[in-house]
Amino acid sequence: MGNEKETLLAFQSAVGIVRKLIDEGGIYIVVSPVERTDIKLQVDRQFLEATLEPTPFSYGDFTKFLNEMSVMVSVCLEEREEIYVQRRVENWRDENNYDEPRIAEEKSLLERKLQVIKGTLIDDRLSQRYFLKDHAKAPYFVDFDWEVNVKHSDSEVDMAQPLPYATCRLRYARPGARPRFPWAQSVESIQIDWTEEEIDYIVRILGVVKERIRAVKQGGR
Image (cartoon, rainbow, N blue to C red; front, side, top):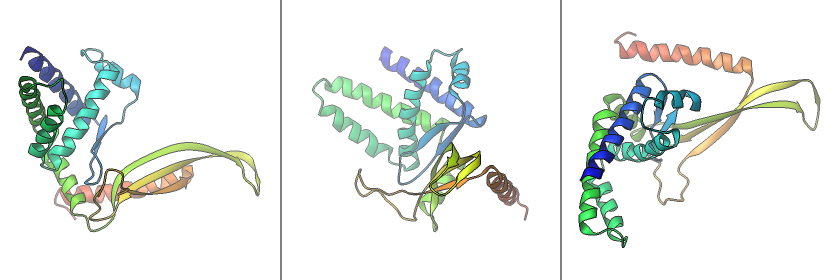
């Protein structure tokens, strides 16, 4: 029981740090009905290590907690906590090194962790974002990644000056998409190259769109 309490306190502390980083814009939670929730850091490693310095967590320990939390956030958003706990219990029973007293202890710890997640990370806004995607009528955002490249030449022309550009990949799912099997592909993607000027343009447009959404939320038009 002592170890269970210590483990739960460490988990609660890590979840509290995640909540703080979310509120400060250092973490973004990507939600999707077709993939596991992804808790994405929006800060670099140096910033996170400085944040963790007064805590008992190393960078590696904290990122392990993030992986565990990602699964649990998905479970809570889908409202399948009981099924998740039961499956974990069944897995533990299949392992020879888990006796019934240990299974009971692990089950209790898992249930408490889920309660911490629900009480700290699952707020109305996150639930609404999940609901919107789960009941989408159009393809919806799943994830986004990017890299910066430099074009010097191609098969047709040599560049007078190297041209830097960004290659961005937008991942999305179609309405009603569900993973039929663990290996099934439920998410599609499109890859686009952007110049600096094009990025300036789309950022301005998205800024306007964001303000319109915010005005509607505040009761404006």
